Image (cartoon, rainbow over all chains, first blue to last red):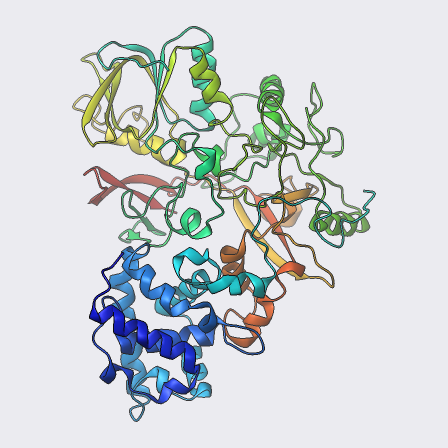
Length: 180
Length: 438
């Protein structure tokens, strides 16, 4: 585990703010308020969070944001998925640059209005970066909560998956009283 | 437990402890021979087998590791091999018991046609399409022996396509799942012949191992109660009980050593502390799966055999074959809860055989199959339709009502599909990485 230094601490504060404010924090320029992060910077975190929230959005039910996917990704890139970290960062930089070129008046992807975020992601959905962040979002949504995502099992609840060891037939509706 | 000294030649050094190595260890040690099994992976226990999808599917919890055991992959010989940093291109269980630890445990037998397809169907230009050197009848007694020794659940005679068998299955089939019921009803309506999937998973207590608890984590996972048969929980303990077999885990064999006459005299390997060791043996058996076995033969090249061992033909590592799969999903009105119990409970083999009228080679089975557990399922349903956004999320919420139908078939042997040594990349022990071209 990382030592809880000042950077980590302020990043935690950012992550808390993100969760607490939901969409409202998008208007803040977080990069100016927070120190550089041990892995992802505050600005990178904000974009990763915004992308993940478009992949599995929050509506009547929890999405990537409530599951803590951005925290998962940040932590995984420094630990279990350290092997992907370098590529991820360079691909993320390309993504951010492309976004700035396309929308020069907006400081970051995270600051784009929702509809423009979706349109931009539709343009890049076949890139290796999008495929990677999509997979990391899914893993963060549904992996065991000990990895930092799937907070309180919200991902599993969304699916209806039960994490237990013992089941007995009938398993579902159609195998009840099935004579064969 | 028996420990063989390195310097004293054992009768057999067996490289790999999976489906082949584990069985050979038991058979040879029971017959009175001294045996050392060298397995590159660790020896895990039932308590290690968690329901941790990240660990077992994406972080080499059981399998070869993309960092320590790197591979490169290319689809064309003109290209340079690229590393995949998520999962290995050729993924196998790197643990005592090998792939029998993490397999799905589908246990259907080959049919007569599989052994003599070339004679009965004719040649196919540009391929190495060939018959087996043996026939189904030669293997039948061994199919029966293994079904009764490790425990296979199934219903003999339920399939009109079943090859002849000398004994029924030792256990009744596993309980049908909702997906099995739906597949069976639909298939029968079409005039097809679904039948209960034979599985090397206990439907009842069998030879000291308990019945399945239906936890749902078979494919890609080790069984936490050993209801799924693996050599780790069947053959290897029996081999060790003879007092003549030592299973040496975390022992990574990198060379078959030969004498001046070119005869194998032992194996060179790295132990768990990365010390180089030499185990002397009168005979060496390579049972390190279809990819690592040719790699080891190629790595064992010496002055006398510069192309690698057993490679006067130049064919070592060539004609790499996979079983292909294709899948699709359907959503039903009520819950199926596919995440529970074994991966597959009904199979349809009506399209198993190749049919020239289809205009292509090959056939295969169709089954209703769990689309594995949440992460992999959520990834795969994105292959059809929305893969992110609100529409995708709506599909995620259909998890318990979704069924996957999978087909699995053969592929043709092509010389260009191969396993070689990568000319540049090395593994964590400094040995040449595997390069796969397919």
